[in-house]
Image 1 (cartoon, rainbow over the protein chains, first blue to last red):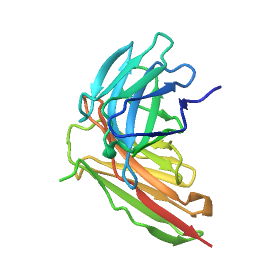
Image 2 (image 1 turned 180 degrees about the vertical axis):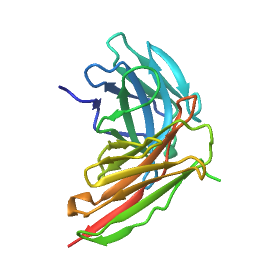
Image 3 (image 1 turned 120 degrees about the vertical axis):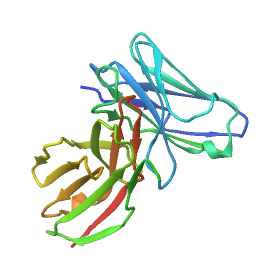
Image 4 (image 1 turned 180 degrees about the horizontal axis):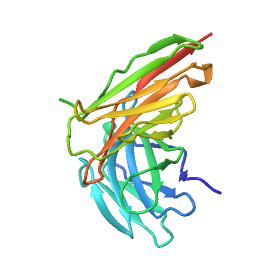
Length: 113
Length: 109
């Protein structure tokens, strides 16, 4: 039973560039949530996708956008990268709308220089 | 006041000790509560849900106090492998989950 997978593992980008991160949910899960985790902090909720629509959104600017595909996988896009966007980006999957009992992927570590 | 607050620690305890962490939350409408464990540079892993009646899983016990708006995690007979950061998560009716910054536990021989 495959768990949550994310790609790439690491990424280095330059300020102003755009980045796309990918996530495949755990088998049987249909909901994907994205989080940003800065060093020494807890994960911060970016948004959640269910039935291919953004259902909930945290306090993040419009530079952060996403998509969910019919197979439930998801992408996180960040435009106009800032130095402060450097963080671990975590994807979590769950079943049904809501965020109960989430399972996290290993994350993508993004460094913006 | 932050929505979810945890003492960052570190809590430094010997093997076999009992240790307890608290997590306070500000939104009285919160409905779902969880504890996650995160090892260094790894993803968070669900440790246990927290129910109003309290729940136990082996050496771990979680409690919810709605009146005082906090949840707790008790670890008995600490093992070296329990060393990690423990994150509490609180979700309200809108299902937007809020994580605490985590409490670091170091169990030493």
